[in-house]
Structure formats: structure tokens, C-alpha cells
Image 1 (cartoon, rainbow, N blue to C red):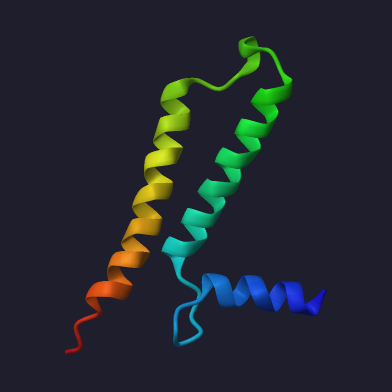
Image 2 (image 1 turned 90 degrees about the horizontal axis):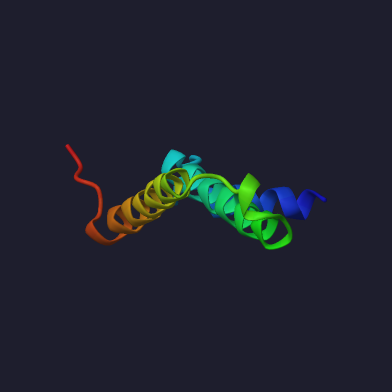
Amino acid sequence: MNKVFSFFKSMLSEAEGVISSKRVIGFLGFLCLAVTMIMNSFTDINIAPSSDLVEAVEFITIGALFGTSLDKIMGKKSN
């Protein structure tokens, strides 16, 4: 169990070991979208969330993960 926690901590952390809020938001958004897709596979369309809400979570997730990648590629400016 300790290995699982250390895996998630390393996955959501930057190189310095600090947990990145963008990675956490991206991961939580991905989980929400995955759960929504699984739930919609087994339920009627009447109880599905609105498509606008799903799109909003999708854009937030893409933006968070893209921002993390962009920071890694471009590098942070040092003062």
C-alpha cells in the first residue's frame, strides 16, 4: 500500500518533490471524465450530465495537463 501512495505522490509531484496543483487538477478531471463515461455506459440518457458540463471539465483537464507539459518544455524563469 505504501508503494501505491509513493507512486501517486511521485506522479503528481514536480522534480523538486513539491506536489503540482496543475497535475492534481488534471488527474482529478481525468478521473471525473472516466467515471462519467463509465456511468453513462450503463444508464439512460435521462440522467446523464449536460454536455456543456462535460465539455467544461474536459477543457479544464486539457488546460491543466497542457500547462504542466508546457512548463516542463519551456522551463521556469529564474530571477
